[in-house]
Length: 277
Image 1 (cartoon, rainbow, N blue to C red):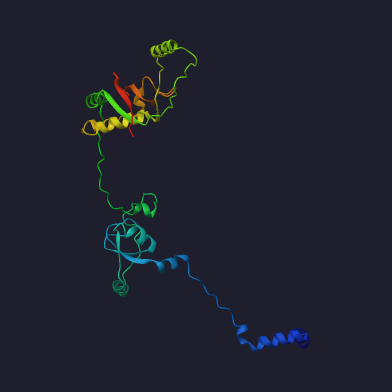
Image 2 (cartoon, rainbow, N blue to C red):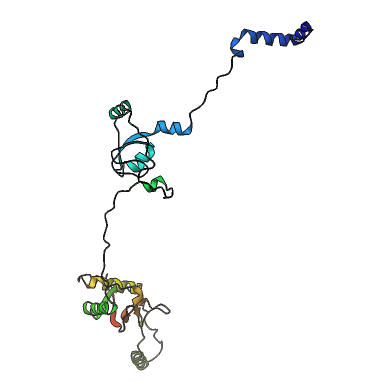
């Protein structure tokens, strides 16, 4: 019976015989496999950490003067620029390892038991920032601003612009008329002169008026603090239809100056003259 069972266990085909023969020749195939464990993530991070010396007390890390291991990125970007810790030289690091100095962080240092967990970046003591006193500007009242404008701005402001040249044609003469008719026609034309409006290239706007006023006020320390806007100036007459912020012809014009909060407006004369070539 035993011989029958042994015959059943023997290989029955040529391929099975060759497989059993190869396995018997290779003794390592029957040896148990050796399990190799890789390093954990925390162990790899511990090897990459750098040992530093604290310059100040840092909660959950340690006291000033102690040696701890931290990630190199945190030391390069935060700790060393903020003068929280210093790098440890290789020679000093060898002495620390030879002396068996513990470089692990103290997570209980400076933290009470009842406090909630906080981020490590928030626990790092940032360097004290110097207090910068804000600049204080004494604002002038609207009434005082109007008084300064009335004092330093003359009654008339002159602007020069290039006029638009108009082609003038001679009046058409009547042919076949007598000399007496010509005299009467000339007298009639002289009694009714044509009104000629001289246009200019560009315009004189309230922005130009404000810039001229500010330039005049800049020579006085107090008057230079006057805050005058374009909306505070308005042409009273002669301006472009629908736009009281500019004029486009030669002549004299009136502007009104009134700052918000002031009661009495000021009036100045704007004289636009032809600019000579």
